[in-house]
Amino acid sequence: MKKVILSTTIILSILGGIPLFASEGHSHGNKHDDISGDHGHGSGHDHDDAPMAGMFIKKKMIDAYNVHFHVMEANDDMRHGGTHNLMIKVEEGSKVLRNVKINSKVIYPNGKAESKGLMRMGDWYMNGYDLGHKGKHQLMILFKTADGEKHKGGVYYPAK
Image (cartoon, rainbow, N blue to C red; front, top):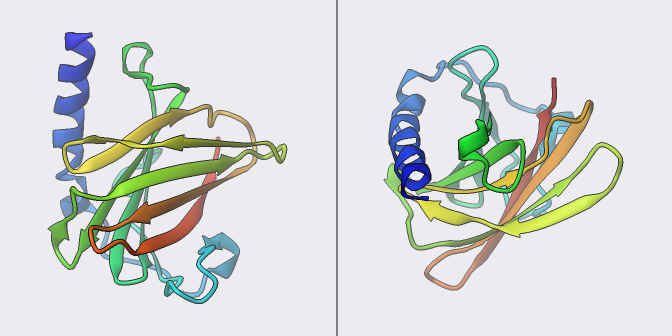
């Protein structure tokens, strides 16, 4: 168990630097890829941050917060409840927020849904889901900030 925690901590600390290498290009108005779920509260502004082929990182503005959605295939010893780890980082400006409560929900391509709370690992919040199915997975989060306000939004994850 200690090896798993140590490995996870090392990977997440490495991942903390990934946005530094992200492409500067971004897209606007891709409403077919936008799942804000915020009913007018979020901006629906997406940034595609994938620095390497096969890596899924998407940055989205939800209300006044920069939210990073990151999905990576999990190794056998790094699985936290699924084939892939969903990781979320929330920032206010350039400050990472570490005192938020985050719940996540995935709607699978077959229409079934699964919800899980996310645990904090460094700057990221994470949990595992089985995201290896063909088709688009709807990834949604609901987070509560220290001021008691709730914020929600999401993105689609394209499975290979």
